[in-house]
Length: 310
Image 1: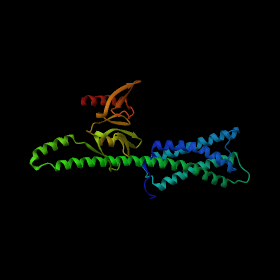
Image 2: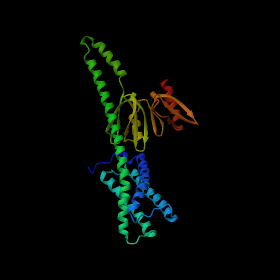
Image 3: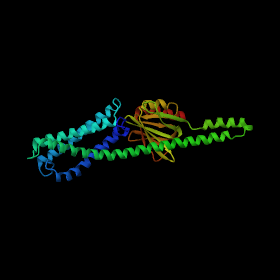
Image 4: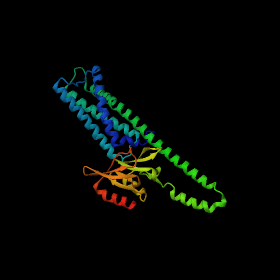
């Protein structure tokens, strides 16, 4: 269990940004309450020196978190981030922030009867509490969202399998005296049959088998691809750990076209291509989907593909 790789969302840019923002917001009421029970807390808004050092400490702590998570993000493809390593990483973050607090306290706001080791231990426990609660809450929410996406993707695949089984069963029940007609019907059905495409992760494992006619667009999110597709009359999404170049290779000849550094769209689902404030955008045939930007470098190739479809 401890050697398992951490879930992909823990090292995504969106998760890291939300986590740091939550830690900052959560730490303020926490420290207000903690101040009542600690003799080594010097945060203040009335004393100018203490107020300036309070701001300095908060900014420094945020910088430590940002640098730490940036390094973690950059290392994710080169170093396997297991649960054990991730917990050690969090502990190192807490130690760094606690050490920063201890240095400021001992240098500027020493308290009689409270030794440096006592300040360091109390600071470490306090920082661990501040960081662990937001980490736990956001991790649970992100894990819930990921499981929902995986469940929707599984339901989609099961639905496609059932539909295919029904189609094959109908063909098998055809009268043997009409084999010629059945063969012709089969050929036509195959021509109309959904075009299925396998989407694989970086390791080459098939993670999602999807009907290309249900696929709307793919959005690049750091080292992940967010697949947006239609399932049960609504737009669902699935996070796939894969580079954009690899996905492009998998989707060659399917009608999926690159329109932006971060977007690949299904050309059959485009309603129109518009322009606003000198920027081009795509409007899909589903109103719940936001406008998708079109960059200048991909505009001509996109329009060429659209004209070839007419």
